[in-house]
Length: 136
Image (tube, rainbow, N blue to C red; front, side, top):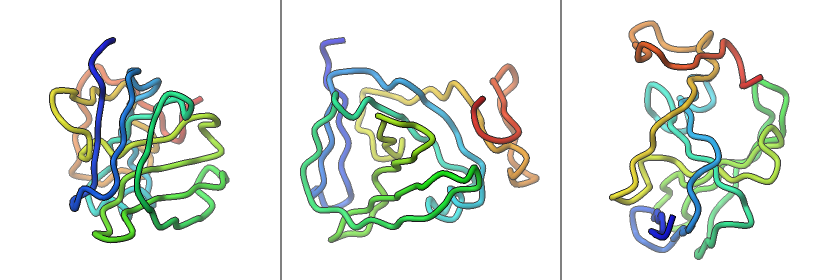
């Protein structure tokens, strides 16, 4: 793939770029992701850490996920927009919040995870690969 995938926060002070496609694209329905994204679920694209460039200052919030993994959410230190997700559960990968990725790349989730925690009104597309908890 020769086109670069890019993302940025609301004020543009954090910028992300990769020349590689994401390794995993998913929708997470856990309560932590819903709370952090302020949406019904989070859509996240996970890239190999060694294939990305990130510029800018982020604040980091650490916690233990429902799966028991140390996890960090990173947001822009200036505008507060949630940008990244790093978890022991995805070693060597960094997740980029899909709504921050710039066109023309469109995230196409391969999986819906933690559907045991999904909100009752959320409909998962037919044919999706679904996990009651995390992947695996």
